[in-house]
Image (cartoon, rainbow, N blue to C red; front, side, top):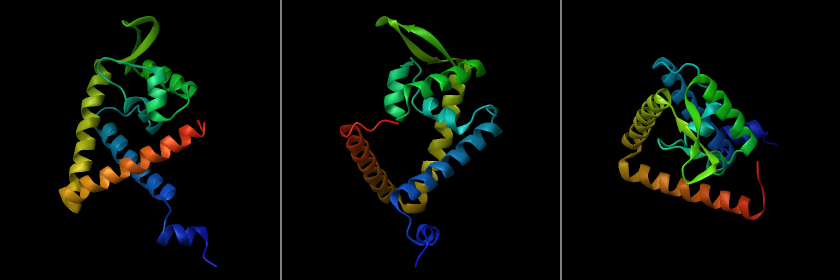
Amino acid sequence: MVTRAERNATNPDLGVLAGRLLFAVQRELFSTLAERGFDDLKPRHGAVLAYLDPDGVRATDLSRLSGQHKQNIGILVDELESLGYVERRPDPRDRRAKLVCPTERGLAQMRTADAIMAAIQHRHAERLGTDDYEQFKRRLIEITEYQRARNSSRGDTY
């Protein structure tokens, strides 16, 4: 009988592959960010930082985009605010709502992270060939969106 460990070593399922990719990309991104002066960030902060826009984003939108509970996003925003990466501001379209906006340090982190991610993607595109890499990304997006829609239609929230 084949063990789960053996199966995942030779024929990993989608969840295992997605996790391996996520953790490997996070490891490179956050270790490189630390080398470039952003050593106070942790991979968990990516749920906010990956979706942050220069003009700000509502916490409810960060929750929806990242797939994280709104309470988790609130905790992460609190942490990033105390570290000096974001601040909460009134939403000019609805004064009752708040926007999570990057500070100057947050904007610098965003530019740095974007450059790191571009380099990672460029490296993979060179390795696989641009057309194959673009096809891979399109298919991965398709699978991801299909799975998220399925979960949403079932009322699954995490």
